[in-house]
Length: 397
Image (cartoon, rainbow, N blue to C red; front, side):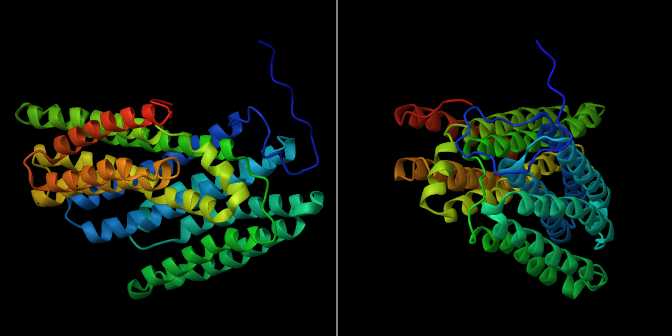
């Protein structure tokens, strides 16, 4: 196999062809994804601790805010790269700067759960300096999309100034969540406003692949969280049966949700969005926040169930049960809504998914809610494999 060609020092940053054949994730994109692993693990760990200490409201609130920060940073990098990755030295160096910002962001995730956002915002400043330079470079060298790219640069700068102003205000608990939601909505509005001036040349199948790879990374963190808790719990012989239940359940949930997510192709749906309007693309792209966040929360819930079986949890049994069943139910519902509804919106798909959500939630009241969730999702997978095959879809990635 020949060695990869060395990147050019500088190339024109022009729009990529959205119909480019065989477009796949680059090694630099994969490296960037791996750097997000640290932040995801930190958020899941903090949620786990909050649940077992019975600080559920504060823990869930902190987790939702922290995960938005992680996901939004990843999303901005991913969609820009899909439209403009020219792999020259300048592009690589600016991406490395963004990676440094991600690492700063990861260091600040535990502080978010305490109501302190300085480190996370600092990480965003580092990332966004590089990202704005990328958008301005694209605006200069791609006249066809100049207005769109300038809108991105301007919008990112304005909203980032808002996040800097948010730092002292976040110390006031009564203002923290409302202001966070307001600024998060402003962040989401930037691409909606920018793309109205002309759609960037993101690649449908490339974007679908990037989201799928990130979903696998999040599921990997779920496995890691459960495995770490299990390895510690096996030192207690009295809890081994309960821990074994968690192990089996985690395999069933993670494997089944992985298969369900990839049971239908998202690329053709996104390709349709390029011709029918950006509404579908925005719903698909933004809706994945709930997919990724719930998947990460499942890992925290499974770890909490290990603490329940080893009698290390201060929270009531119902709380630790819900910490698994609720995010699993949300994940199943969002996989249907975001990933499967586009290829098949019929009742024959919606009904099994809806029934599975209800059964998973009902499992909260059973002695082994994690096992109920795993068995229900596995049964749903059997149904979906048959439906996908009948519809001409795929039974596996």
